[in-house]
Amino acid sequence: KNEVEQSPQNLTAQEGEFITINCSYSVGISALHWLQQHPGGGIVSLFMLSSGKKKHGRLIATINIQEKHSSLHITASHPRDSAVYICASANRDDKIIFGKGTRLHILP
Amino acid sequence: DVKVTQSSRYLVKRTGEKVFLECVQDMDHENMFWYRQDPGLGLRLIYFSYDVKMKEKGDIPEGYSVSREKKERFSLILESASTNQTSMYLCASTDTGVAYEQYFGPGTRLTVT
Image (spheres, rainbow over the protein chains, first blue to last red):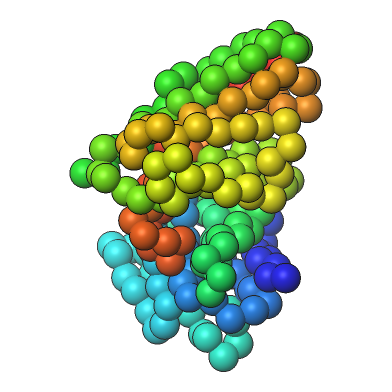
């Protein structure tokens, strides 16, 4: 059974800091998703990746298939980045497993 | 721009009531999902559907049923609401499979009293 673990659970940082959120999973997957959830509930897909690295603005996602690990980085963090970040693994049997999320708070 | 809409943002119902939550997507996606989200537990899959009139149980289907009569619409039904079904309910859709980008609705916060 695949387990998806995220760390840290909570993270508070100052505006401008470089942020890293980690995600590890236990079985082979077909894709790894990073999602963002703002207060109020709406979830937005940030990245979907199966290898290497993707970048969108100040956000960077990487995945290491051999180590079963992915990271989400935020450069020059801003208070509007405050949200819950969720990673989810899409398994080869077409099931999706979600991590419990990392609550990020960026202080001005 | 994909839109997934849910019938209500907030809902308050009494124990024992039958509750309908509706989800509509406008991108002709094959797959639709219902999740519930609770503090400390993350998102958990209740039911999903990969085609009209088709449905599959997720991880926590007890106390719920679903209906998909049209491709764009996926309904979640609580046959007899109970207080332990107080939660945030999120609908999502995706093209073909979970390895594809999931599009989420805004969520329905349901309170059962």
